[in-house]
Image (cartoon, rainbow, N blue to C red; front, side, top):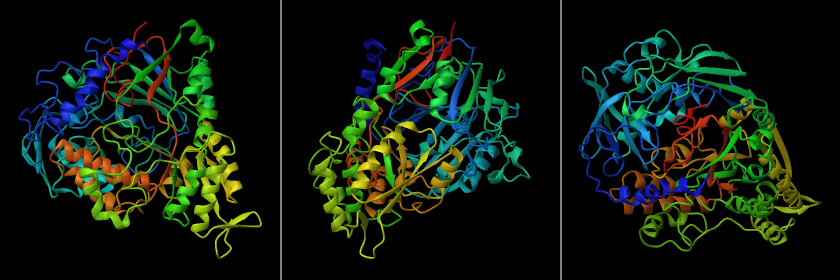
Length: 604
């Protein structure tokens, strides 16, 4: 991608500060709602700024997933479903603009109202909103969806229900939700719940639905064919109700989208090279530079596109299960991080092209600052000082190696920390005072070649410490089941984070669900400091307070040594058929599930 593509993005990134600096007073506009200040788009906006309202409709594309699936219901805890479905087949009352930190615009709802203190929110449905079978979306469907998802749905949907004091119909097409806890984000979270059809599930068990019980949605696409574990075919609904609303103009342009399933990433890549797939996302910079010179690229039939972004790094790496000893000891976790020779591993896998993640919000203004905590950040941390991991207030950075294959200095430091924690080498094996050996089982998904390579290198360092390592490589279904059951010592971990973190932070690292099967808090964080700082974020009434609370949270999580961070994805990389086009204006958030293929189109 040429440097010209950066020009529309940079002013938007600079505008983040202006959005956060706006007054906290509720905007009177009823077409949208922002976390702070007013929505950027006016009531009469034509389309999202990163969509082309004149994009042509048509075309057939094929995408690839690794693994398989045994469910077509992405809204329940049971089973594994194609991750794309909840983005393509179902909709919520409001839709998110990915060119603003956190702003919603009307989708199924034509308007939104809320109290000045956000203690309640009221939505009015569009009169023409329809499910794919042509039946109208009713307030009864909305109320049923919120209650059912909140009590029987996937864990990602349950947190909101406990914060709802009441949900009631206030007019023929209006519903009001009143909250029982002070939290300014709840009004926006409520606008993002998928709406399902109540009548479809009468007399059926929603949480235990079979593969063939495909949830009816309101989205632009419907499933018209599938074969379990092999493919899913979706077609654009010619009678889609929302084709002309501003939020949808220029989006969902492709007529047919098919998802093919492959055993691993290597097979998927070969299928793409052979022309069987329309696009792939590449997350390895070295592979992008060295393995995308195949004939289709040379002919110009496949285009390599890079999409910049201004979002936080999030956290990617190897997470440790702190519910188990010895991973509940920060000294052990620091020792394992010291042994992970990132500089050498990164050079081997990515050619050193991708920078290391240094904290959960690195690369953004929300990231913890170097050195000792000061000002409001320090004030927020001091009440928890006795329980904070070392380095939280003083300053902490992930260990750095010397770039050599042996990484001797870090191995020596790791040995000392392990000895402090009660682990010493006896007859070549690291043992505790009881004589029990130190063992680690690393859980990986089959076909995850990059992370397998990283672990293969890592094992050598762990063995030099006297640690015995077993690698369990399992298929996608087993991987999902074992992580849901918290059945691992260490596994690969990824949490994407936004420019407006909020209630999802409780799902990721809140104490409430730390030991619940299926929790997204894989590391098992149970920290009063983490819980308190999330509360501080959610009740902040100024940008300054919000940023301070987020930076303080970033310090606690990073100094907790829960994850050994690896490389960041500082730019999106998409290789695609030349017929796939996209707008020149890019969103702040860059690439993601709601960018490609949603605003792309097919053009011969």
